[in-house]
Image (cartoon, rainbow, N blue to C red; front, top):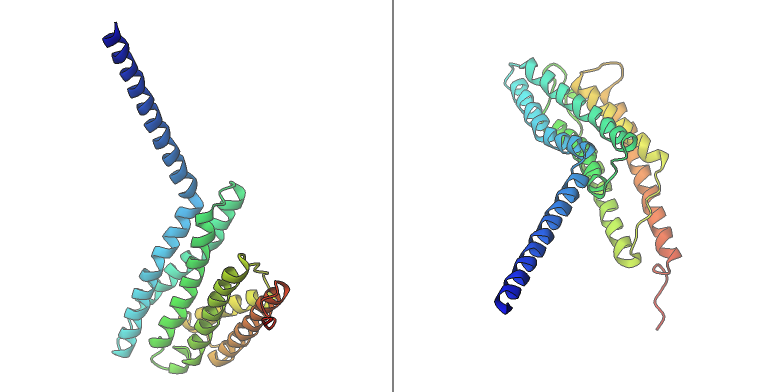
Length: 236
């Protein structure tokens, strides 16, 4: 009888372990599905488009430098960039409409956005897309330096706020939105080889709002530090 009772106890314990393992696997599956939503998949595809765009853009610049522009490479780069830009609005729509907002999406979406813009600006600064008029084929060196410097300062500033305050309140400002739009227009100006205005005028406008938006965000960060009492002299 004791042996039979012990055997029954072991079987019940084994069933409990299996049930616990099944429940754990189910929770892990739900966890993965919750993070890998359709919106997140679109964002990941957008991130994967960035190296494809950079590759085509650099290859086309090299073909221009050789004096034998391969237009299919330019068109391919433009199509990839347009698809990536459109997917930015698409994943946001899917996340809102189907309630697929997630913490992973909060991290990946700005990485994809900034990655696409910065990669395009840098690539179109180191390679020239115009054989006939180089002034329309690439950005001046100061433009990517300004954009990267602003984003680096904001990134470091956000880290400082998080370390000192424990949270970061980012208030979207219209100057930042205008800067992003003008950066996109400048990129399109080079890729489409527009001649409506000199490229330098478009770049100067984008650079101006990029700088102003950086000043606005830094000022807001300093205001948050002051409100939390971290910007005042330490009492001895």
